Length: 504
Ligand SMILES: Nc1ncnc2c1ncn2[C@@H]1O[C@H](COP(=O)(O)OP(=O)(O)O)[C@@H](O)[C@H]1O
Ligand SMILES: O=P(O)(O)OC[C@H](O)CO
Image 1 (tube, rainbow, N blue to C red):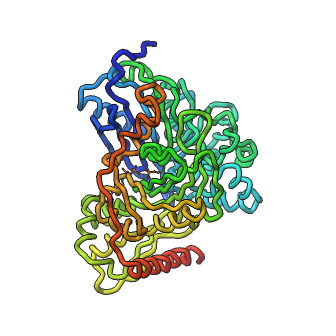
Image 2 (image 1 turned 180 degrees about the horizontal axis):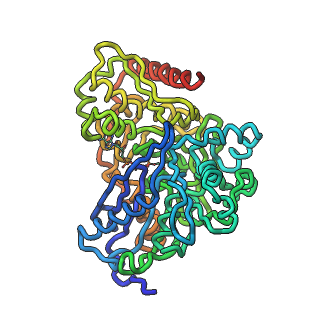
Image 3 (image 1 turned 45 degrees about the horizontal axis):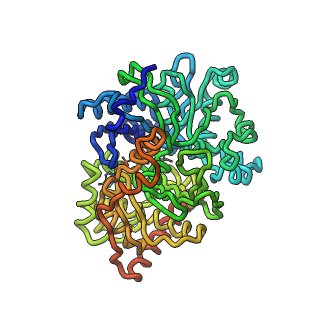
């Protein structure tokens, strides 16, 4: 195998496989974007509350943006020191190792089809065990019940899996397997920690949970640190072998990309969903109020942990206004509408399209709009959807402060919707803290690049990359306390309405 290391100083390639699009970004030593390509792909909704992706389309879209990003600057495999992958987490792919073909569509993290599996698990007295072992609140969000559903519903799947013919993977695993043409079946600690099958304390697949779901261990990938050489891209794909040296779930990658390396450091990523993570160092802090304990990205086996608040619908609400409601032409337009009115005229939107995540964990809640009067316009409605991201973040941040005992005086933000200045100002107003937006909001991809780059020596260590982090904008709070409390109390009532709907 010929591995090009001679001219390895130019770029690190990052593949960012998100919920709605695949991206490829080439970064330089200063963490600057040198080339980027992005492609949206199809969201499949076979039934209300179900969400799927076609794994072949994920792979094809990812490869097409690689080609585009590379050719834009005339780069070749020789120019790329290493490749890092970051991905939508929990989304579950099962494929046949003999053909390389998925046996079912990828079941996406947002999909609620296995809510009953989780009810059963709770009735079977497994809740506490799962909580303690995996750090997660048992929910259909995570991979375990999705994998069990595929094995239960695709004819012959369980038998084939037991015979060692089927492989399970989250999207990182699926991409690495394809990039190495079936040579490497692997995942990293961060992605494994989202499957609800992984013991986050002993760093191994948990036998009791996989037995409970009747999942053959042989189909599970090997688990490694986020920053290490997993394998090399197969020669024909890039015209050279590039080390695949980083993989991390997108939210943990963003935490790394924001240089939140020390306990107490926090970031919030506004993408399809919104995910607030706090690094808790080598302590796996257990939440009593619906936050998750998860593994943070790192480059060795001594893992660090994070506390996470997961919001299922954030930017996806804006995308819904654009694609399903045809209220917007572009996501960015939401800012113009929001600014064209003084407030939402009392309207609240609780975008519980796929249930509510932290801190409520209610899979049956559904989207709810309250407070509509005759004067409500499109602009008020759009503004209410934007504001819902900030309110959901508030709910989580307050719990995180209580549980960690850490005061959060400022919030680092990133992700697609963090480009919205109106939203960032409103976020600062509602939280009453400074909101810091870095120059590079593609922090997820940057985190994966850093992990891969450190693993191959492109960057020396964390200190070497810390100096790349720079603020672009700081949003300072500018709302009187009484106004804030009034808005928040309306939000609390709106959430109660969404939960009441679920009870019925
Ligand atoms: N200016 C904007 N204002 C509000 N939402 C936005 C804006 N730009 C993008 N978004 C939303 O952000 C999301 C895309 O962000 P991204 O970080 O690419 O998400 P993902 O990685 O989940 O695919 C989409 O849901 C989109 O609607
Ligand atoms: O696609 P994103 O960026 O919203 O991230 C999805 C999360 O990883 C789901 O846990």
